[in-house]
Image 1: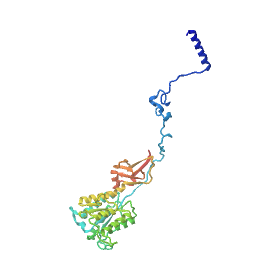
Image 2 (image 1 turned 60 degrees about the vertical axis):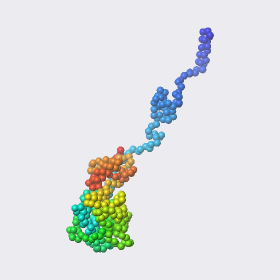
Image 3 (image 1 turned 45 degrees about the vertical axis):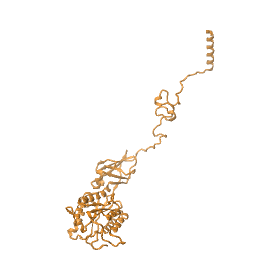
Image 4 (image 1 turned 90 degrees about the horizontal axis):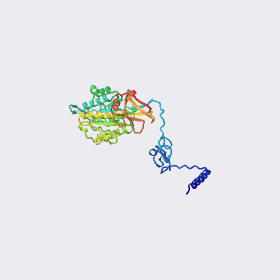
Amino acid sequence: MTGRRWRWLAAAAGLLLGGCQQTVLLENPPPEGGTGGDIGQADAGGAGDRGNAGGGTDGGPPAVPGDARDDRPAVAPCTAPRRFLEFRITHPSVVIAFDRSSSMSTPFGDSTRLRVAQQAVRDAVRTYQGGVLFGYQEFPTGDTMCMGGAGCCASRPTLPVLSNYDQIDSKMNECEMRGNCSTAASTPTAEALERCRAAFTSTGNSASDGYVLLVTDGEPSCPRGRNMMTPCEDANFEATTLNNISGVKTVVVGVGEDVAHSECLNDLASAGGMPRPGMLRYYAGRDPFLVRQQVGDAVEMVARRNCHIDVLSPPDPAETVTMSFAGRKIERDPTGKNGWNFDGNTTISISVFGDACQQLAKGQVQNRDIKLLSECR
């Protein structure tokens, strides 16, 4: 084709385009898989519908934590004032029901059952008198005015109070000082427990803090003719009544080989509501060392009631709580070894462990020196 004809065709095309006034732009095609994401940020936004980094689905805006599409509930800010929580520690009350039957004079190691058991009780009372209210009772006594008659009576328990070592020591020596100790071989356990029930009822002690520590070297005797029950059944009945009606637990400590394996004392410990785990459900002191250990263990078990704290003004979930004894911080320990922690998933009760628990059990820390400070996290 000649050059003149080419020039004519080009001019005609120009006239046609100019008449339509259309501008055509040629663009690169969109990325395969969709239009989400900015061109040139494929490594940040990825391909397809994910969009740019952190983008929402279908190329939407980035998800913002806490917005309408976040299912997690928003936590209200803590506005509680800094405050000390009110709490209650219930000191346990223990009446020591002590067997003074003639068999307690049996030689035992380098002493007698009586002297070994007396010293074990003295040691326990001295150690825990700051945190436990102790009272004292002996059986049998020289009295004759009781259901079982002469040799089958029990003394009236003294009122359980704190710091009571001197009174209990005096009561242990009283009949010897007066020269009127019973020489009866009988063991009026049921009579003793019945008198303990009357004492606890009169003082208003509740189910959570009343205990009888029965220290004896023999099975119950002295039949009282109640519903044709044996002495053992009678004692079990009294222990059950103490537990079910008065809420008072009976802890049994046997002294000497005569009661190393007693089904009657086993049943009595179960009826009392605080049996030991295993086949032997009472504390058996076969020798002097074991008597001292078992009495100490039994009293310590009761004294540890002081390690349970009821929180009367529970904190808000958004608050944090700090415990201190006389200004010294007690660390929170969820493992339950040394320190403190709330019980379960509640904030209404606290358990204290380890050294801090020992201080509470022994009354080495007074309630006024314990602080539970609650404040916003």
